[in-house]
Image 1 (cartoon, rainbow, N blue to C red):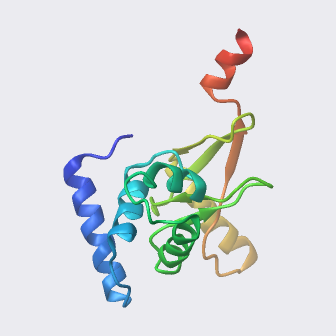
Image 2 (image 1 turned 180 degrees about the vertical axis):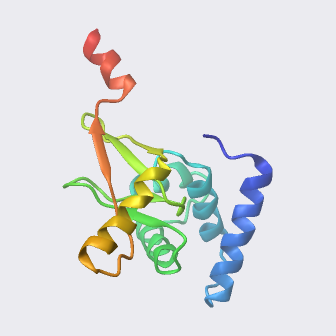
Length: 151
């Protein structure tokens, strides 16, 4: 799902304001990383972000990307997705959604299924826990990897 130019600008402005409200200074590199995350629907790793942006920001290091991702995470702008032993991936979309992960290449796609939100209510009712959130991953083989396997 591609981000339209208008919604990109709106999301970027809201994210920048949220950072400023938290006392975070907005640098061109920080804004570049944010823009990349908003536009990406691939849940990129820090290394992928670095490789994509380093031509634009030649003085930026991988450490800069990691440090900024940490700031974004602490400001609740991004979620860090950790699955198994592979590198952390980052997701700008903080709305309730779920992930389906390719067991072959690690690609992650989002999907929504509102009925799953009921699970929190049921769990709370049955256990008397105060449920704060839940996470669900589904694993499979993406269409691209299926095609490779067929050839």
